[in-house]
Length: 294
Image (cartoon, rainbow, N blue to C red; front, side, top):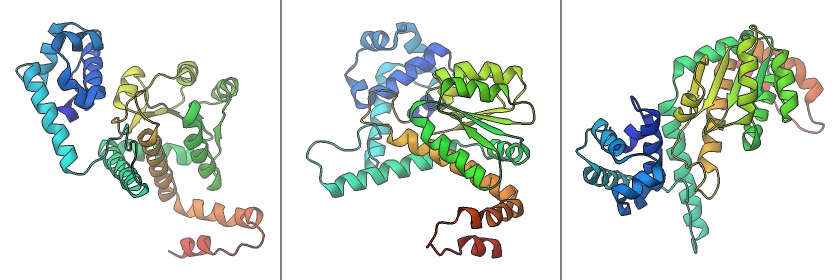
């Protein structure tokens, strides 16, 4: 395991060391230009903390850390991987942009799949299958994949709610209990929606899962399960949220697929019952029948 992967996992790191590792990862190739004093200032830590982190990474000091970081970046470039935070630049052709975006997608999906604990997905899916209600708690751009997930659960007969309004989210949480399931979504873990909803859900004994990075999990401990996404994308210094959006969508789609696979006969039966009421006039589509025959 190279130093980049070790810093992303942050196993055995103190909170200060986690912040230092995050700063180094965000600097990327610019890290080689930093002195140890400059790094300490950027990460708001002491020089001693930098030395401790190097030892935990199996390195003698910052000089060796710079060498290992450069090697990791070279391996990524040799593999044809794109810069997830800035996957294109001035003067790029459409073909170059398309190839780079594809690389971002492939990297993100591969890393997210490797980080996703299948036992946790299975546990969450089994609870959702028998839940009285599933509540989604998030904000901002994550409302879109959350709403899609909610709609998909409704399409197979599972009562799911995704409220965009903060006050309505709290009211939804107050109506939930031990026979429900809550899913929070936050890439960073810093979320007003989670800050408001999690205490209410905990008080009511609602099984709660978080979709986010390992750092998000550390900021929100004590939940019933964590569905990790790739954390290669920076929080702020980026062109937009390509990777985090895709990672969250992938995890939610995997969870939805697992719910359907667990309760396949019921899911298909509900689809068949609702199809005459939801079918769009003039469209001919026998996909549901084909699925039922598999």
